[in-house]
Image 1: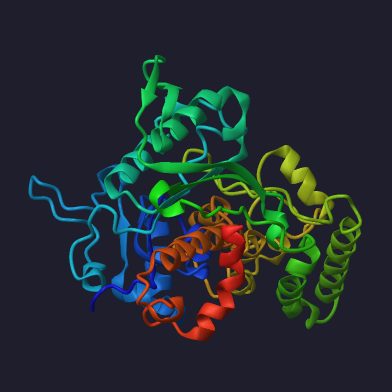
Image 2: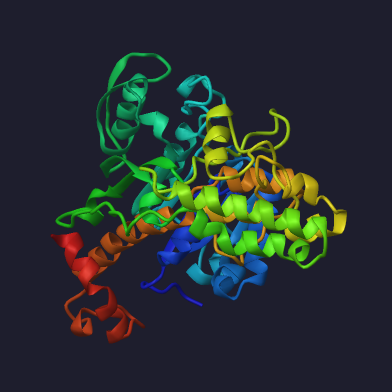
Length: 431
């Protein structure tokens, strides 16, 4: 099969459990490769791609690569190394080459810039900004999207942000290693700034500000304007997000007789009362930012003391993560999971709801491994909103650059109705 010009291709590094991949997929991108070092998260990606109908394209053409992104080689090397992007060659009709890719994306590790960490920035061994810049140079994709925590916007990282921008679009910046100002040639991109997006503005029941950088190649952008996505509606509360799943978790015990049923009714009623009351607060009853933690820091819970206090106002105990609904019944762990005086603990599935994952997305590994995947994710609805904004520019650029012989400005194999459906977004990109 030869490549189709109406397919938007992407490669994502540090893909985690797929939060960003899901969003970009929803925005219309097809993944040629997803690179993730954590074996549990990589298996989460593989198993969902294998089982979900809507991921049939990736099932045929996407490589899920479990390994260090520093060893990832997307383009064949002169020294004889083949491309690690293998399955996609059947779609492309050849090995991936420089300039072929539409989007390079990555949620590079946040600890170097997180307020919860030491904020070592470039001095943190986990800083992978240099690697994604190397890949941008190698692949020369039409667009680059980088996601990180809000902390990267702090004043102390201004020089580093300036350096990243200079590497992409050219200009003066201090080299992060030498500290000496250099005039960088750039890679031919126009940086559309760092924008801080709040997850709750996009239907995610969580206060999760994320900093996103978008850069688009100058020869692609030209006269087209990239437009950052705006809020999609009023915030969704934790009560509305979790009411159905909480009812299901308590249901087996409500059906029992005696003290167990009375306690279940009391605890569920208390949770609903607190969660509904929270809807009247200025934060609309939205959850605090989930914290995924790391392998170095014990078991999973809902974050530091301030976060646990915020969860307590929502009627949730943040001291740990509950067993799944079925496991709780099987192990008879309801006293721990559901009947605490402080309120129920969240299951992994409920944490995924708080992050905006679709219901059919399943996570691999044990409970702690699963929770860390969820807690460290980029909320899919936010990734989808940014992805759609990027896709609007790329498609508008394709239409602008089509040969005059193309009928009615339509892309090959693109129906008139499909073109009409998205024309408003493309026109706004040109505005």
